[in-house]
Image 1 (tube, rainbow, N blue to C red):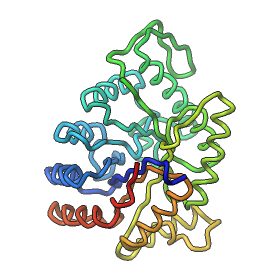
Image 2 (image 1 turned 120 degrees about the vertical axis):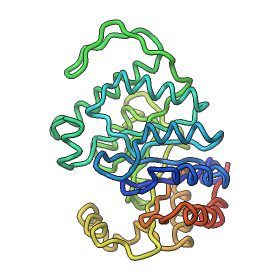
Image 3 (image 1 turned 180 degrees about the horizontal axis):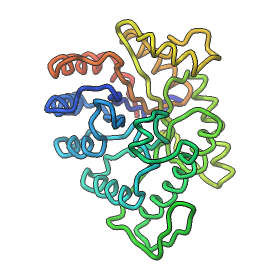
Image 4 (image 1 turned 90 degrees about the horizontal axis):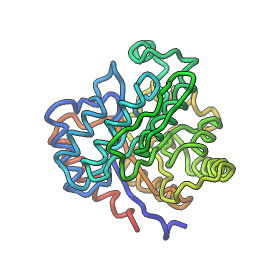
Amino acid sequence: MSEQLKVRIGYGLGTRTNLHDESYGVVVDALEAYAFDSLWLSEKISGEAPDPLVAMAYGAGRTTNLKFGMSVMVLPGRNPVVLAKALATLGRMSGGRLLPAFGLGAVDSIEQQAFGVERTERAKIFNESLDVMKKCWTGEFFSHEGTYFNYDNIRVLPAPKRMDVWLGGFAPSELKRIGRVADGWLPSFVTPADAAAGRAVIEGVAAEHDREIEDDHYGVLIPYSFGEVPEVLLKLLAKRRPDLDDVTQLVPNSWESLAALIQQFIDVGTSKFVVLPIDEPRSADQWTSHIAEAADALLHLEQG
């Protein structure tokens, strides 16, 4: 299976990244120079991370090949028509280098207040918002009568040439949603066995809805740490993955172990990778050196 895959490796920035000034441009330039596939940006209103839409637009404007994605952008609490217009515009202006990925939002008091959505309503609003956005991206007039949004014969232009939506998650309900409505899967904190099992569920649900997700649209986000994995993260992982005897297997601690884990995912059919340093470099120069090391250690795994 791995011989037929189009394997690509990108980078991710977490919600605690301090790349919210000129140093962000230096990192974008380095990723472009070393031919990484993509850069994925997280979202947290109360965190240091830059706004993903602004950061993607800025990055796309200074590059020609690097793709930009969200890992993930919160959908409930946003106007789906306005967001659809913004993303379609960015997709067009970047030459199709946009990789939209959406989520429900963090279970956090500040974040929930910022987006103004009750936790119990998030999933239902998410589903309807995504439905509206997909209608917007057809470029055709449409009407929509729903629980949260109502539109009468509206049209959104420009229409994107292509807009593949990526979703994360590994819970049964999340896997079913991906099979029903998504174009790609990007989970985190999963094992290669999880990826194979999750893909089987997604493909089954997609087939039930007369859909098919392309073979090269199955990915994974892999956090890594070359120092001590923060205790708070280990506790979170233990709570999130009680089925695993050793949660440290989810967080590689060297270039060698990270490359080996990527190869294991490739062997089960995963082809899109986002690697995310938990302990980020502290300066632009350190980031540049780190990216150079990553290129030497990882990019030989790309294929197709």
